[in-house]
Image (cartoon, rainbow over all chains, first blue to last red):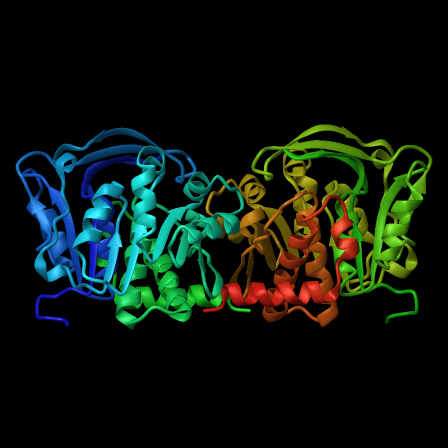
Length: 305
Length: 305
């Protein structure tokens, strides 16, 4: 039952200050991290609570940005020390990137304890953090309607057992194509998805970056292309934005079905396409609902036969 | 006006005997070449005439394969000498490949002279051959309804001026994403397509291999994903198969419109997805109309929102 300060969607993940270099520009100490992008994206569709950690150096401006999206911050921990920092450089294709440095800082001892008011949220997105922390969240929630977990190659390699435990307890696993291949030791994505679904999740979403995403579930396969933007300024966080908008849209529409998931993935692709047009959350901060609905209509017409 | 032995679609291109090595298998002297794949694919939808050249070593079995598809062979030249040969090896991803050898043989002096009965064909596909030869075909045809040209990086690099002349005289240019970028010196595919359309063609199709294809035209953008096959045995000729099925489907439906092109691209993707399931034309030789319609329905439902 929703109370006054309750949130429909809870998202857990990393908060980072990113230094990003593209072939065109270098920017420092940008607000980033999986939960920043995902919560901002979800906020366009529903009420969302953030579970994450920042240090004492975290700018008021960044807090103000979260508030501007209307994100509930009761689950945001601020502790003594420095905020997690990441820096990376993109190749000329603006797709592949190298990590230059990762400083965990306060994230090293992060424990995603959830406020009481978050525990009965209907929709939970476990952003890309250590499987052990994702499990800690799963231990606190009270039978949500839908749980999505994101992951990455790092956890497949160094926390395989814990990750399998997460995968066995969620409704949807979301990962990119190379990660799906790494996890399953299969090449073709349908085979990868079949293998993952046999591990537990009813649904698997395989993200293919600029080529869109594929949803595998009991009702078959759905393919959504990426919305083709004219200019990609910074692709960082696009997958998190996609995931956040997807779960937000599902929550807004109040139920999980093949039809609802297709619409949710389409909206994920749309909000992600806006997000990459600027660094950090800059484009999302200016995004209007009509920008989303315009591109959603366009993307629908781009695939109509 | 269609006469008894007239063909609706004329396709010109290369005929080769291919030696292909994949991570799983090596096969020698396979029937291949752009016009072989494209004519076979088009034959499922309409009457098609082949313009190409083979040597005196060309097997009767290969001729029999062409006849099994019902391809009109009046435009097929057989001359003294050896047939064009190509050999290549695929990477583990079954997408990237290296050419090991190319022996032009009789293809070196090929001149695509068209039989009288082909010159009033309504649909013409200029397969991937030297732009000079494509121009020779354009000089012989009598105002076809729709002309499609395929090309490749080689011609962009070594025959740029002639290629621009071809591009200025066709209704649709078809090329893959890296070639579109090379031709236009732009990165984002929408910008590439805008630049190419400004060179003349009303339509541009950008092929993205396993990620499908995009159609750019006066009615906007259409994106069709590749049909996700369980097993890719040999991707050679997939682009030619796609092009052939596309123009064949257009001809069958008797007119070019945004709606007709969308359906034609879908069928191109479907027939190409069958083709890659075996070496050479082997899968296409066994393909039934209901195999095509089944996958077309499936692919439609995979993109439905």
